[in-house]
Amino acid sequence: MPDIEPARDPQIEPSPEPSLEPWLRGGETDVPAVARAVLHALQLADEDLRKWCGRLSDQELNFCPAGTASVAFHIRHLARSVDRLLSYAEGRTLSEEQMALLKSEAEPGANRAELFAELAAALADATTRVRMLAQVNPEDARTVGKKQLPTTVGGLLVHVADHTQRHVGQAIITAKMVTAGTQ
Image 1 (tube, rainbow, N blue to C red):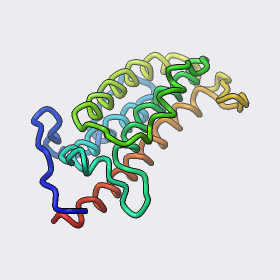
Image 2: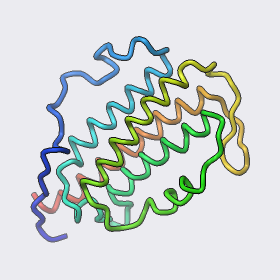
Image 3: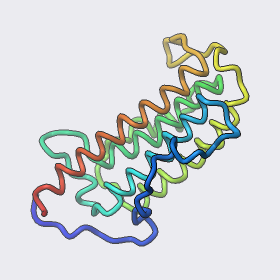
């Protein structure tokens, strides 16, 4: 990949590095532990993605080093999968719009400002929805997908947190691979 000067946008610059991860800051204490952990995972995802990927150019965000998925894919997938998983936790099936967005996650040509705006909106929406789901019994039965695979509200909430962090890690590693040749 040729040398690329990363784009700068003050609206998506990383926030100053916090001294503690969200789960150690003592926040969200009004929410039960499982939902609180999910909220903390979402907060950490936002902070880490802005820190490690927020300064990448559009070209860097869309680059697929060694045939891997792009940073843009991981950010889109994270934002959209959280919406899908929370729909299942709410006892709903996926809409046609959610299915169309799923099919477009790997499309090239992501714009950095739009990508981070989608992420911010998804995380804000997820925060509201997780807070609502915190009032539901985590053992309440739910199903996932066309096959109606069995799970629970708590199982889906935990998966929101672990799946989110998995894609944050993949986005960070990909960002490091993309920028390794430009430093």
